[in-house]
Length: 492
Ligand SMILES: [Zn+2]
Image (cartoon, rainbow, N blue to C red):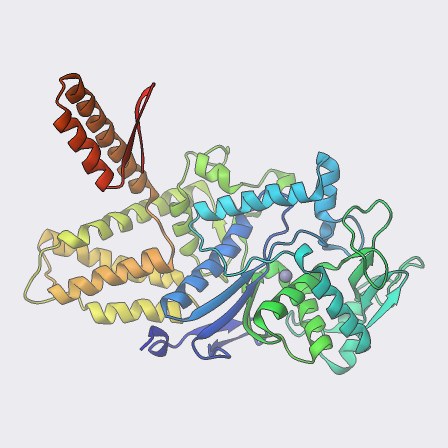
């Protein structure tokens, strides 16, 4: 029996504002879409936190035995500066400033994004589609929305008619806004504006002659509006209605609101069963912004090269720090908070390593099965990682008491303790103890170097039996020695 049949998950659904029992559309399968990065600069630590929250959620579903199709896109066109309706494409602007091809910008920052996520031990999504790879699908949706009467074409651009849509549907239901209030609070359109109402948003924008990122369409050369790509890619890979759509809190309006409108206008269905939003990361109590200097890049945390920090912190430790807050709460990062967290992280890792050597007793002072269920209960309650971590530290306390001899544990309970700790710490929270694996690889290379030296001495003494034995037995362990002019090297 898969684990998911024994556990009931509740998720906070941003659409209803309530915690709801999670029931996937197709039993045993989950479709999850998360808005990915716009790749025009190095990935922001706050974005890493959002993606990390969904990586943890993805990991927990997989741990429970669900088959998850996790789609996280790459925005490589259409996202305009300041998320505005007019203005330059973020990627085209960067390309102009740095005198690069837009696709060079995209490649550079996609690679950066993947490198950072790999350091943080993210699992890759099942599909990572790009906006530019789905222009045809986007054009098809625009045609569909035009046909249904919820969009209009002006001078080579196509706009979504929010007022018309709101007559039959509810624009603003995700963000809790009312269209009347939105209209009352916006200034009048200027004469040169193509839009009928300020709330209308672009599905397709005409490309001015200087605009380099352009595609042909039935309405002339142009490029898709930013909101459209997510509707196109989520529908293509997950269907017209799917289980979970996630993203940062800042995307709720207008981006996700517009996604709902586009999907409902084109196929008449509400696209998503559970909307989930991750909260932001602040630095020293203030919003992060490059312009004020109150900003830190992931790479700077790992290297310690930022005045805000007194030392470098490992990616695993930073991940642990982020997991200590619930994904819907604001988390503040500071040097002191990281230092405090590091102590806890090291204690947890040391504790896991000591479980195997715990003595076995005839009775348990530690009720491992109830503790294991308490760990699941924490995660089942809207992925409450801070409560889970508190439960893990309950176990750490018992491990120490057993080590001291003040408590005992049976063989069965020790096995449950070890398996559960490993599952939640490594598989679900995705923590890695890189420090010790670095130390291990240093030790390994020291040992291999020593054997290379002993082999060299054996050969100098014409003791070929010994030198061959060293080479062959290392080869059996998967370590290949290579003799060259510069001496002997090895590879794993
Ligand atoms: Zn999106």
